[in-house]
Length: 126
Image 1 (tube, one colour):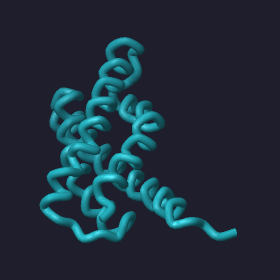
Image 2: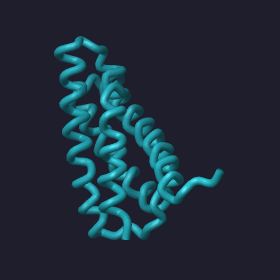
Image 3: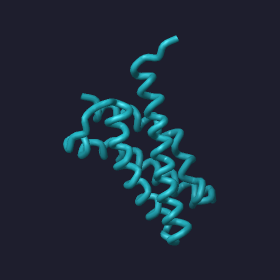
Image 4: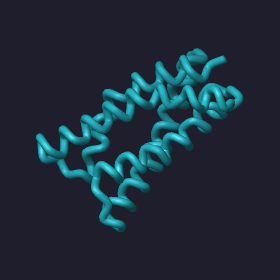
């Protein structure tokens, strides 16, 4: 059984997502636990760092397109929805459901990953 181009892209997108999640989480924990920064500020900072890395990994590895300034400035449009949803879900999980701020960021991934894939494919593909 052979996989389609889109199926390969989905697999690579998930791998890049795993790398981005790790990047995000490392920055998040360093700020949260080592530097005692507020969990929402830590979240946004980690998100920005992983966003820049995500752009280049998605261009070169997932969609095999040349990064351009135009795409770089359009790419945040894919992440606005993601960041908004992630931030809202993080707040809800920590404040309303009293889930630990250490693990709460993972809860929203199930919802945000498919949406981000579709949006990034639309923006990055030539």
